[in-house]
Length: 142
Image 1 (cartoon, rainbow, N blue to C red):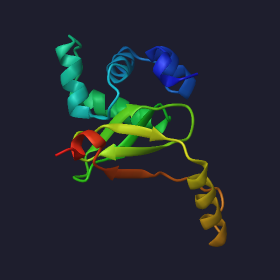
Image 2 (cartoon, rainbow, N blue to C red; image 1 turned 90 degrees about the vertical axis):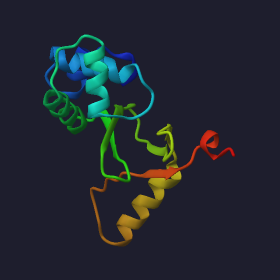
Image 3 (cartoon, one colour; image 1 turned 60 degrees about the vertical axis):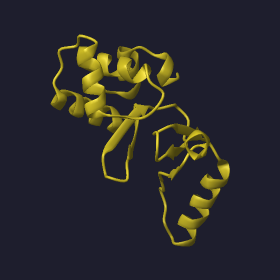
Image 4 (cartoon, one colour; image 1 turned 135 degrees about the vertical axis):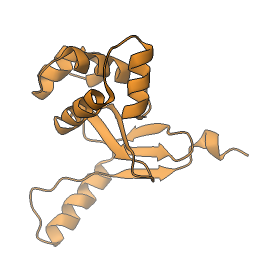
């Protein structure tokens, strides 16, 4: 099941979190964009779409969705949390520092390196997060 192709309720059920009207609206808002969005940006979009939802509710739902693995979260250089619907397979992100464009990257080389590095230091039950920040091709043009 791909998160991008499910309804808000199905997304919530598939991740073990309770389906609510607000969570469904947030899922729809996330589905309508491909780049990462802040809670404030999503709140503004939801309000513009006629949803009666508070910013605190958006934050709380995004955190629950992130904890359940339904959304990807990354932090900008300034520390702001950004959110996007998560694909099912493990992946990493290339993020443009200028425009926020994000590309999901699946690379088994990174997985093998992480496992080797962890094992070399006696770590087990290892997880990791990798985000690479730079400037996309469009933003690099003069």
